[in-house]
Length: 172
Image (tube, rainbow, N blue to C red; front, side):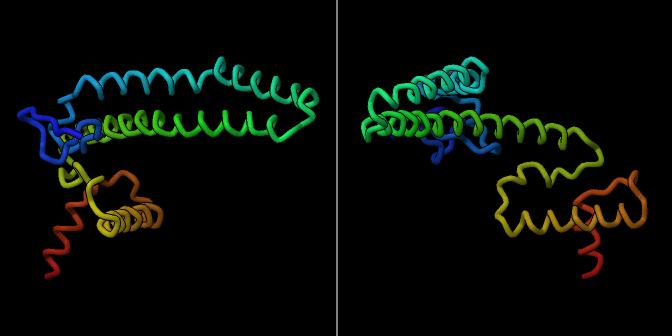
C-alpha cells in the first residue's frame, strides 16, 4: 500500500489505516478511505434496521420452508451456511470500520472536554495510547477515589490524576 503524502501525515499512516486520535492526519483523508467510510456507515446503519432484520428473517423462513423440497439435504444446509458465513465475514469489516471511526470521534470529544476543563488533568488526553499496565495504574487511582467517595461520603470533591502525581512527588 502507498503512504499518504500530505504535510500532516506521519510515516506510519498507511492508506486505509485508521489514524490514532493523537495523529493530526486524521483530517487528511484519501478518496478511497472516504468512500469506504461512507459505504460502511450506510451499510451498518441499514443492517441494524428493522427492514434488514425482516429481510434476514424472511430469508431464513424461505430456507426453512424449502427444507422438505430438498429433503433436508446437505446441499440445503450448505446454502444457508455459505450465505451466512459470507455475510458475517463481510459485515465484520464494515462494522469494525464504523466502530473505529466512532471510537476516534469519542476520544476526540473527550479530549476536548478534558482540555476545556480547568479541574481536569491534561495528562488524561490521549490516554488510550497507554499500554495495559499504565492503564491499570490509572484505573487503580480511580478505584481508590471511588472507595474514598463511598467511605467518606465525599461525592462533591474535585480530584485529578495530577493529585496522585503531586502526592507521589511529595512522598519522595
